[in-house]
Image (cartoon, rainbow, N blue to C red; front, side):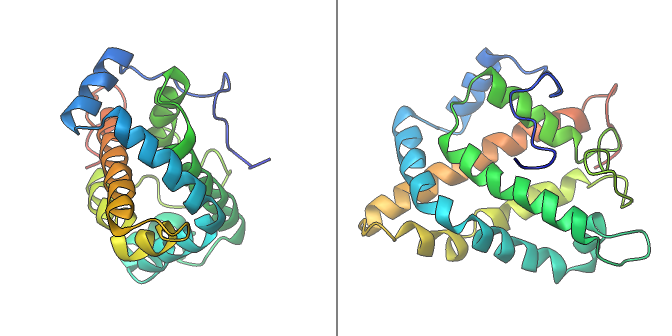
Length: 198
């Protein structure tokens, strides 16, 4: 049981994005059924390495004070509880990205993830004191780290797939992450939710 992981539960926010709009986003990213197949395969390979991958991403966060502040206490000190619980959810997000069907439950959880980065829900899940929100601009920019082939591709070679297959898995991952970031932007651009948190 992962603390604060509420995928599919009644506690999850309802996405204002329709499934038809999600299909349009997938088309905009050229995310195809073939990409879904490659992403499932990537999930099999990445699942044993989620802690390492999240650790590599968090090393970038830790090296940049302007990013580290969003997971630190107001005095700048680390909160081990927050780090552990949010880290476990971050690892699960990798698996969900690769292995969950992109249905209503998945779409709703994207809205929940987004809200947990805004003043509406940040710090609430874990009952912590930290920065009140993560600006959208840093979420968008951090996509470069989440998609970094130097972090992902070494873990995608474990099954002995050739370079073409590894590239296809990585491309499918990048497309999915871009779709998710587009979905996460919704509350930030919604005047009734979390505007002015760019």
